Image (cartoon, rainbow, N blue to C red; front, side, top):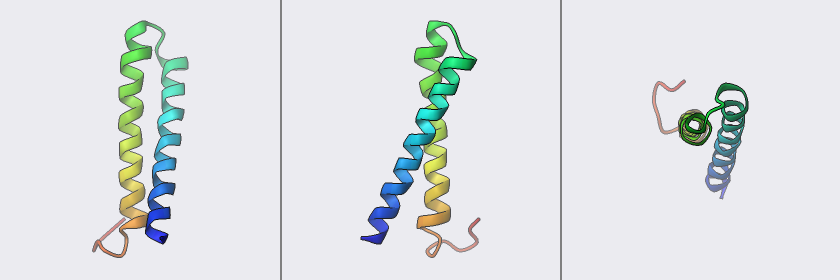
Length: 69
């Protein structure tokens, strides 16, 4: 049950990162259609994937990986 909750928290963190980066990109960095509706979601998705990986690597799988963080 503990590992399941760690995964849920990790994914919620990724969702928060995705939403925040999407908001920053679409409101402050890009103004045209392609930037707001194409580039911003791609950038925010990549940030969410990377944050989920880092969170899982350093927190959830810390006991199973040698030479971590």
